[in-house]
Length: 197
Ligand SMILES: Cc1cc2nc3c(=O)[nH]c(=O)nc-3n(C[C@H](O)[C@H](O)[C@H](O)COP(=O)(O)O)c2cc1C
Picture 1 (spheres, rainbow, N blue to C red):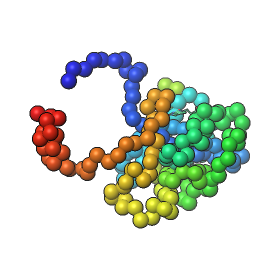
Picture 2 (picture 1 turned 60 degrees about the horizontal axis):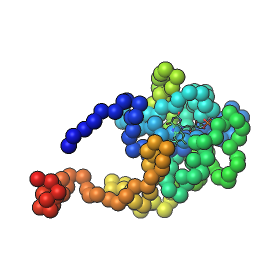
Picture 3 (picture 1 turned 90 degrees about the vertical axis):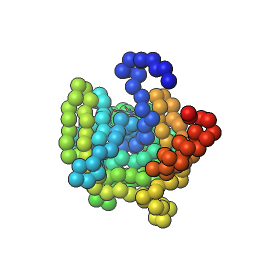
Picture 4 (picture 1 turned 90 degrees about the horizontal axis):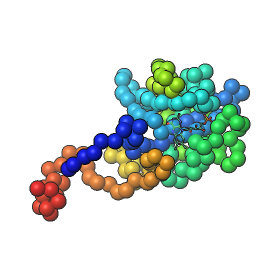
């Protein structure tokens, strides 16, 4: 295929989204959205998260060195959108109803409306040019009781229904494409149907 070049400012990757829960100085919770978030593994699973500018979430994490990352799914997207479009410094985010519990292993607020949440402890902070990059160890994962029978080695994303961010828009995932390692079968099917030569 022919390609064209575009400037680095147009960087884009389909991003899952997380509501980040932190503890305010007075012990109350604060939540916001972070999409610049990825996963890493070094002697246990970690989250790598970039928080830009000045925001209450960042102040809280720099002080407490811990946070929860609550996966945003289709059913809690608009609650998350509220958290991501309001500043904690402007006052408590209590214009809409939601509830939370403290983490099981880490003392952070975990959002009840989310089905899958990570309790994290920050192990490294890298101060960048205005943004901060947090590396955090995942100490506990809380999942919806309804997922108890889910095969954790073959998670069915269509059941979890994560919301995906592409600049300024939210999307749902489509269906399953196949299983890892099935390339021979699928490429042969595509060749037979003339999709690839
Ligand atoms: C869809 C969406 C994605 C966002 N992703 C990020 C992000 O990756 N990093 C970041 O620093 N802020 C991100 N934000 C912005 C924060 O969520 C926003 O500044 C929020 O108001 C901060 O809340 P706080 O002041 O309570 O910390 C995002 C906002 C939205 C709506």
